[in-house]
Amino acid sequence: MGWFKIRERCPTCGLELARKEEGYQVGSYMLNIAVSEGIWVLALLSVVVTTWPNPPWNVLTYGGTVLIVLGPIAFYPFSKTLFLALDLAIRPRGTE
Image (cartoon, rainbow, N blue to C red):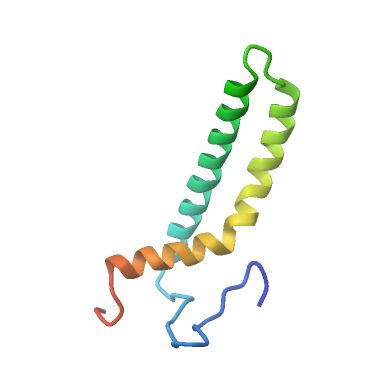
């Protein structure tokens, strides 16, 4: 398996990981974007607050761009797994 491909089933318990429901993956995409943007906002605020009154605006501009592009890619498999865990907490296995 690769970074962008999830296994169809858990090798240990057999839980279906790749849900076949239409639109199911949209939740993990939204979670991925929300967490990535949250990390970007926290990083931006922490750098501005710690370096005030002379924040490094060039570093923030280019570093923020890199973080916004690479953050969702780095968090992608974790967002799929975390969204599945949230879905299982709301809709436990065997209720469908």
